[in-house]
Image 1 (tube, rainbow, N blue to C red):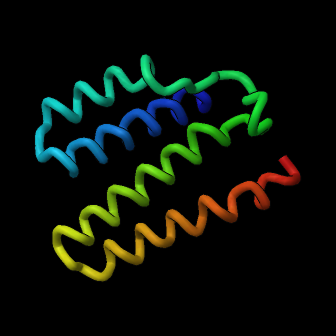
Image 2 (cartoon, rainbow, N blue to C red):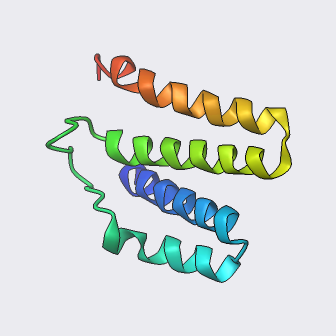
Amino acid sequence: IVRIASVMVAMLSFGMLVREATFSNRAALLAATFSLAFIQFRMDDDPILSYQFHLPLTASLLLWAATFLLRYLRTGRRHELIAGAGAFVFINDFPFTCEGV
């Protein structure tokens, strides 16, 4: 169930980014629905990254960082920039936090 949830979070993150970029709920729904056809998420351990939830989590964090930075460029609010930068920094630190997993 947790593996399916991590893939669903990645799909919804992609939909959020598309909605923020296009301002269209239909495009966001279409992108979230068809993201599994174009982005390969494995339910098993990833052979390249070799961690169980690493690929969906990395994709989600990268999409969140892009979404928050796009919102910052549109609105100019500082907390959007901090959230985007925080997600990006966590992406870079995440492989080191999974060493014991």
